Length: 189
Ligand SMILES: C[S@@+](CC[C@H](N)C(=O)[O-])C[C@H]1O[C@@H](n2cnc3c(N)ncnc32)[C@H](O)[C@@H]1O
Image (tube, rainbow, N blue to C red; front, side, top):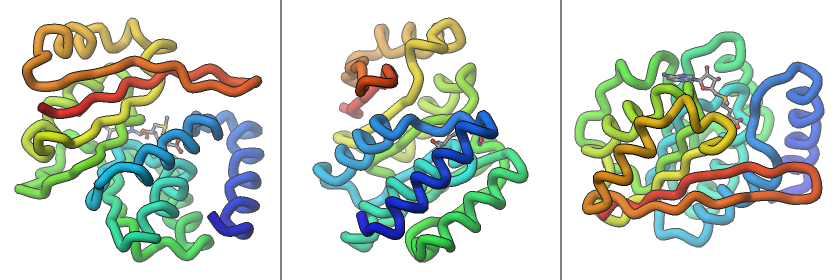
């Protein structure tokens, strides 16, 4: 990542701490970007971009390979901020922004090889079921905050326990000295 983007992300991080915007932690954003970088993915889907912090981390990796990111969010003004923030770091050609409830969109036959889910916790199972037809065997699904909000996503845990022929999954801690996040990584079979 170039210095200008690093500086911009630092500024954004300071702002989100002050404004209490629930962006990914830096260590988790780095892990997400690392996974995308080492995977054979071309078409990435993000559910919940907020002000675009995670979107910039993802798009920065995709830019090197001319890959694409489609992102969704339902809240203003953060959605408009995300578009401005992406423009400020020259990544607008990589990202296709969509405003509204992800569950109301038709993704037709578009196939994603990597999906990042970071939206309303109680709908995580609905998101997973919806994207099932838009992923393929080998597609990776990365889900944030699966421990802190576990009680809001019991149905997700239950579903994946019972559907291990469809998905294999791991729940992992991602941490540095300051933060501890738990993420779920699934692979479609
Ligand atoms: C935790 S924030 C996302 C943070 C962002 N991924 C980041 O790290 O920079 C969750 C976002 O999901 C959005 N959201 C919640 N439910 C949604 C839905 N059904 N469809 C689209 N966006 C949704 C919210 O508006 C909010 O901006």
